[in-house]
Image 1 (tube, one colour):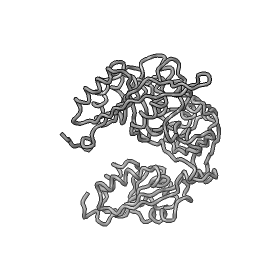
Image 2 (tube, helix red, strand yellow; image 1 turned 180 degrees about the vertical axis):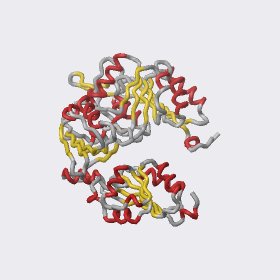
Image 3 (cartoon, helix red, strand yellow; image 1 turned 60 degrees about the vertical axis):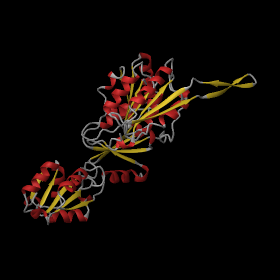
Image 4 (cartoon, helix red, strand yellow; image 1 turned 90 degrees about the horizontal axis):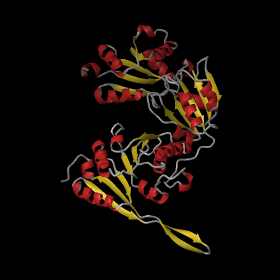
Length: 427
C-alpha cells in the first residue's frame, strides 16, 4: 500500500457480540454509522444493517478472508474510516487476532483500533448462572483440540464449536471413557428470538446430534485436577506379563523430559503404557505417540488409555525406527524398549528434530557401551547425562523386614547443547 494514502486511515476491528442487535455496544454502533468501508461475513453485515439502515450506501464487502478484505481496502483508498466485523469479542478466540497480526506486520501506517464486544461465552454463562472465573474456555473452531483431557480435569469446560458436530463426537468419547456423568449444555443462536438451550447426558447428545455453530458447556462432577507430579502407583495400571517402567524410575525419567502442555512426544517401546499415560496427563494440548510392536502390549495400551481417559494418547503399531517415519516431529522422546535398534532410533529422532530431548531407560551393558560410543560421536553438539539408579524396597518377612532390590536402571538424557539450540556451532 502507498504510505501517503494510508497515513490518515483508521481500521476498527469490531466485536459484534453474540448476535442480536440489542447486544451491540454504543461504541460499536457509532463506529458502524461513521465507517465508510465495512467488511465482514454475511451474518455480521445483516446484524449491522439492523442498526445502520443505510449500510448499503457504504462501501461493503461480504467476506471473512483476510486477503480478500485487505485487497478490498487497498482497492478503495478513498475510504479512510474502515470497520471489519467479527462475532463475539475480538479479544477471545476471534479471527480479529490473525488480522491484527497481519496489519501490524505489514501495514503500520494504519491507525488500528480493537473494539470489544460481548462474548458469546459471557452471554451463555450469565444465562446459566455460572461465574466465568470457574470455567475453562476453549475453541475448536478451526483448531484441533482434544477435549477429553480438559473435561477430565476441569469442573466446567466451555467450548466454541465449529461447523462440524463436535458435541456428538465428544459425547461418544465421553461414553467410551466411562465419563457418563458429564452434563452437556448447548446454546444455539444465542440472543436471537429462536435461541435454543439444550441440556442432556452424553448418550442423549449421541442420539440427538447438534448441527450448526453453537457453544457448549461440559460439566464434570468427577473432575480431578491435573497431577502436580509424576508417580501413578504401579498397581493402578493393567499390566499382564508385559514389561512396565516402574513408578520410581518413571518419576526420575519423566522429570528429565522438559515437557510443555502442547508437546508432541514419542514413547518408544511403550509396553503397558505407564509412561504414555503419565505424559498424556501432563500435556493436555499435546499428543503422546505410544509405539509398540507386541500384540499383548498393544491390547494393554488400549486398556490403560481408556482406564485413565488419555484421549491424547495415540497408539502406533509397529517397530521403531520405521514406525516413526509418518509421525509429526517430536518435541521430546522417551525410549523404554528398542528391540535392539537403539542406535538407529536415536539417529531417526535426531533427523526429525535435532533439538528434542531424548530420555532412555536401559538395563543392559550392551546399551551402556553404545551410549559411550554415541557420546564420543556426538560430543561436539550434544550433552549426555548418564545416571544409574538402584531402588530397594523393604518387604515384610515374618517378624522382620528384608531389603528387596530392583534391577538397577540406567537413565540417559541426550540433549543438544545450548549454543547449538540457538543456531550456533560451538565447535
